[in-house]
Length: 97
Image 1 (cartoon, rainbow, N blue to C red):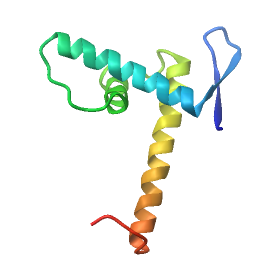
Image 2 (image 1 turned 45 degrees about the vertical axis):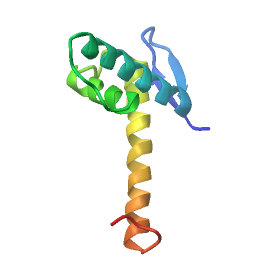
Image 3 (image 1 turned 180 degrees about the horizontal axis):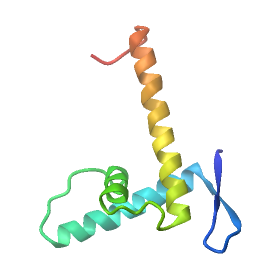
């Protein structure tokens, strides 16, 4: 299991696991989607994608160290997975067309 260290609001150090990072972003996304639905918007994306969108649309960077760490971990995990898929596709190993 992967972890990331971050400076918490008290100036100390804390850790977050990759599982908790995904949970944090999904929770943010669910809250964001519910708020939009209450205002008449039809949201069809996953909680994860809504969470990433909310983080950027609401400019939450720097507002909460734990959320910043979670966002960084989730984006890195997704980027790494997509890069691996691209490399496999380029090598002809069951790539996408």
